[in-house]
Amino acid sequence: MKEWSTIERGYLGQNLVERELVKKGWNLFKPLLENGKVDLIAEKDNIYLRIQIKTVQMNGNSKVIPVRKISHNMGEYKIKTYSSDDIDYFIGVDVELEDLYIYCQSLFLASTLVLFQ
Image (cartoon, rainbow, N blue to C red):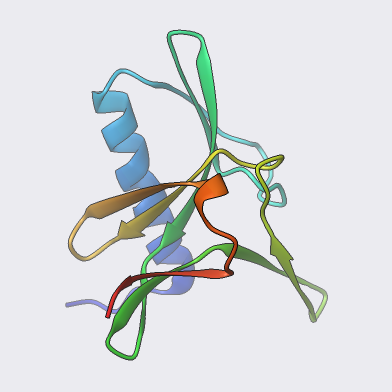
């Protein structure tokens, strides 16, 4: 199996989420720039959801979703957390299995969500 770069995994994950939402009748809106906290806005029946998409990562024997934003700007790394003012849902994507894990942002406060141990 091919080893994908972080950017490739992100694009594949976002495409999987978009495909599933479109199949379920949602309209999708994407930001023009990648420096915001929302990856996608989904609308259906006049309900709007702000979505952040993260790819599932392995940490030892555990699958985890990093629920923080790391920005790199001119060699400077900044770690930011999300709040319910920023997003409504995290969707974790296991790119290899094409599985989606949907979590309401208000359900957790940690910077990493552990799926399996």
